[in-house]
Image (spheres, rainbow, N blue to C red):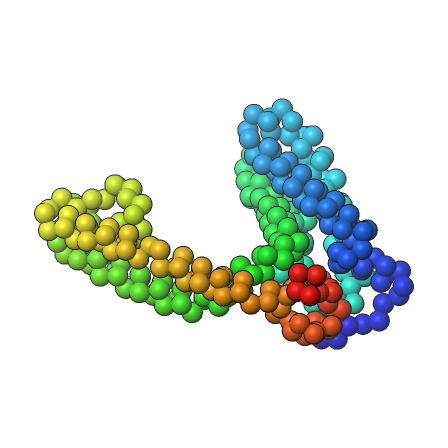
Length: 280
């Protein structure tokens, strides 16, 4: 994907909307954050039945104001973007689209007591909170740590699945339907609840041997519950020791992992933001 030529007017809008280096760009980001938080608060308030009954129409009007503003912002982003496809297909581009779709879907499906799907679709507006991550460079460090930990976490998760299956099968054999372990899936559910130390208590072993197995599972849970935290913490510490400037986002497609001397995004070809003074 290559960047296209844009007019001076588009470039001016691009510098404000996608960039944070200019005062106008910083103010735009601040206003956008305030609008995002305010719109989410409105959605939360509207989910309270008493408030919805009394102020539902006002909430709906305010939501339309936010929807129109976010729609204009989304269209302007596409218009001024040097690489429109990169933005539209990026995580934040998809989030921006999901943030405005529910209101328009509600126009097709009139609100009624039986059409709960409209109310459920409106919850998708919460996803616009993810836009806040675009303004946090530190989020890239955490995301990098999670990405580097993926294989280790997968191995850990696989081992946990094996352990829970073993414990579940043991309790199914030892306790049986008489104690509520009607089948192996229910027994595995019990093992997951026990090993993760949640312990709902809806299914419990009654025999001495079953309780011994249960106690062993709980001790194993306490012993290994810190493993994924340690893995991610180690990777996070490793990332912090390195130069965090390699994790700067492309303002166009929001992807990170660029070289220190890179001037253009290696994914979409757009200009990269300048290095911060922290790394000079």
